Structure formats: structure tokens, C-alpha cells
Length: 113
Picture (cartoon, rainbow, N blue to C red):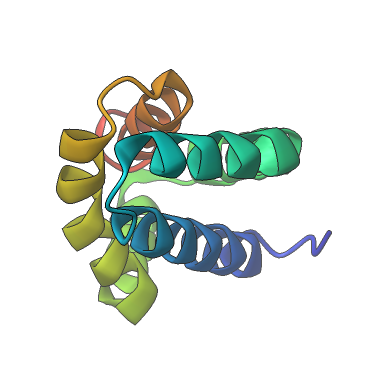
């Protein structure tokens, strides 16, 4: 895995955007849940590792550097898609705790420290 936190964030967000986009295309919610659970099972360890790296990276920044990093991150096209897709995804798949935990952790990374 790449040691660059920004590169890790890019990979994580691109992967999540692809998963959310594909899962929202399912008409049958049970097939969508099955798809999301498969994604979770295949990626949960890597996502946890990336999130821990990002939390350490952001945790070591002073307030000004952190604000600057968040502004740069939010400008990214994939991050903007992620922000747009999260409410739609959460509405359709409320019962998927894995995503809710990861989403809350992501929000805390940028906005609660």
C-alpha cells in the first residue's frame, strides 16, 4: 500500500464512490445489500488501515495545516461525488452498519478534531 496519505485517500474515495454508484443501480435492495457486503468483506481490512493512517496523518497536523488539507481534499472530484452519494446511499442502505461507521469515522477525521 502506498505510504502517501493523500494517495491513500484518493484510492479509498475512488473505491467507495464506485461501490456506492454501482450499489445504487440495483433495483432489488437485497441484491444491493449482497453487493455492498461483498465489498465490505473484500475491503474492510484495507479501509481500516487507510483510515488509521489518515487519522494519524491528520492528528499530527496543526489547525492551519489541517484546514488547508481539508480544503484541498474537498476540491477533489471523487470527494465531491462521495459527498453527493453518501446521503443517497445511507437512505437506501440504512441497515449497513459498516458503511455508517466508516462514514462517521471519515466525518470525524475532518470535522471533529
